[in-house]
Image: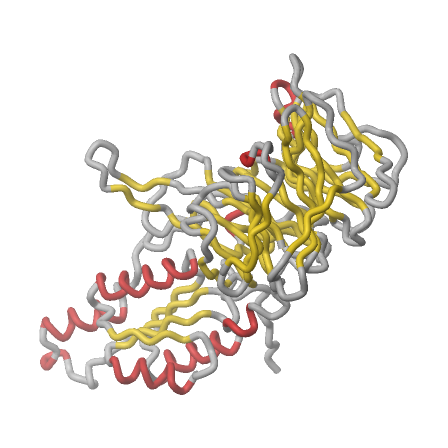
Length: 455
């Protein structure tokens, strides 16, 4: 009796000769496993019939002659362009000589048999895998739109980096529901926002002159109005600035990543009770700054440490046990190094779903070309730091600039992650939301730019 094994993640599969017989059966088998199947056959109608028979699965029909290299390349590039890579290539297309004797086999027929049965294939390097390690995780196949958006927060809040305003936007469309005026003397570029997790409460850190003060934004149930009030947390003194804030899952505490100016580059993390204003602070003697704090649960806090000088090798995503004794910021464990292989982590956040979401850019020296995954959003295990799957793949972009023509790497920015780790706000080629791997563009930010946003 055979053993049926479900793949850990969906794969991208190209099957030739998929319009009938063995090829169709192979396409059906991969489709039943949840893989994305690209069904190629010399008959357009036969390929379409295969896709029709497998309705409800991710099967795309293509017509083409496999003896023509460009026909296979067209399908492989379509698959790699949509999913970032091709995991499996099955050459099931074949022709025979109708049992012709050697005297009846023309040179043209013999060449045709060899071209289809022997040499047909994509050739080396058509679908180049990601050159780094973190980005090598298989790209997720997004579910249907109505499934992808299930549980999505109703609103998200953006803080303008040019004017002292915050905007409450509908998550479905990005439409501005209400605009909230912020204190007039703030530096908008330094503004931060974090969601409380209930869909309506948001904490803000606003730089006002030499000090940073903290506020609470409460949004109405329909998003049409919002009220800004001061929080009990004490303002940061001159010489200190916030480089990340996060509200605990219970909504009772605020974590702040602090940069301190001076001759020595150093920083701290502070956790403040929103009921009493009491605070606990962690510091380190190593040079560097914490940023982008995030909660794994009510006790464990994550922060991205950017070490400098001799401490640069300690950079990455760290975990801090806020209930443990002591005040050493780097007393916990580093879950994810800043650089793994040729991949550099731009930002990483813990989630209460037991996962880490990271924006990653390839910075190695391997050759980059068409179809190469050079950046994206990756989901990793919070326990091991092992990449689980790629939620969004950024491919190498081509520049036709006569002075510097070639393929180049574009970064992805991670703006916000919801509590379930299913819904993200990202800024890559475009700003938008990423729902279980399904991207939807939204207004409110320029591509590939940092933005203060939360939901």
